[in-house]
Length: 118
Image (cartoon, rainbow, N blue to C red; front, side):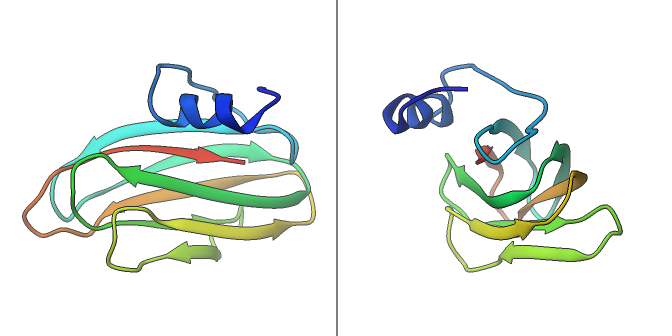
């Protein structure tokens, strides 16, 4: 965990740090990947109670979307605006696994993304 926002943004920008599990509202996880057009990838994390925000950026121009699902498979947050910087915020009342689905909504462009849960 980093103590200041500047450091956190540097990690988000893809400098190589990766965290696998977010366990409290003060923790975070970094995820990244590449997607072919019209495909998605899911990332699963254990999170604790609190207010959470999932953000990602498509480092190649194109439409990137995020959907967040709880343990029961219910969609609890999403951003499907036609942009390359989706942000999805939600409240969580207990410790549970969440699934972050990153979607390359572009029908013709690949996506190279980095995201963070905080």
